[in-house]
Amino acid sequence: MADQIVITEKSSQAKDVRAAVGSRYGNILPAEGHLFDLLEPEDVVPAWKRWSPILLRPEGLYGTRPAEGGNKAAKLRAIREALRSATRVWLATDCDREGQLIGQEILEHYNYRGQVMRVLFTAQDHQTIRDAFGKAKPNTEYARLYAAAVARRQADQIYNLSLTRTATVILGQGSRRVIGVGRVKTPTLAIVCKRELEIRNFVPIHYFGSSGKRVGVFSNFRALGACM
Image 1: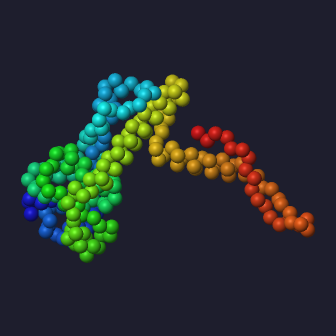
Image 2: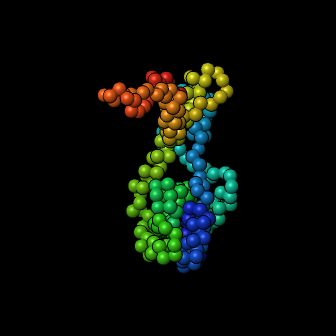
Image 3: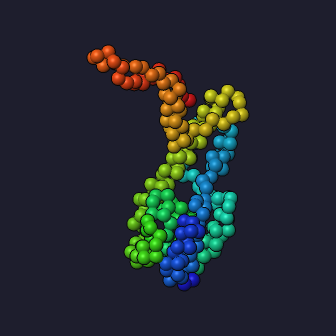
């Protein structure tokens, strides 16, 4: 049906949906993950092009622009053209927070005002998909899920870029090497680094029972130095 379209998160998902429901709910168009990237700081405030230790937090939210790479441009173009005549959209992206963002950010970017139904499924067998379409709810019921995803993405942009620039300017001491800081990457690397230092500083110590016979070895770690 030309007045309806289905948006999935990836091509494999589109293939499974097509096999399960055919064209009953309209043309099935896959995204390729995020089809939009957030604007860079200098796109929002030109003065932010120069790296300095400041908080890169705009007055509102960072806007979006079409993502590059892979087949993203072609897939976005196909969805954009279909939205021109569609009166109903079925969002069949992943059922988590990120899936909600990937689908809805397309509609928000193009100010789509038709009806939007949310299709949620965790398995991709035919019966599960058919049942999911039958139980679809208005997308407005998932407004909080979308808001949470937007907040996470905006916070990452502000946190990651602000701290990366601050660390590079202050700790880099004029070198051209970027010191990357990320909400997920940095603490994860710290855990790995701490464990590696524990392994390198491992000192075996023998211990003995009341009879004086050695009964085992336990570890004693030297004081650990700074990891980063």
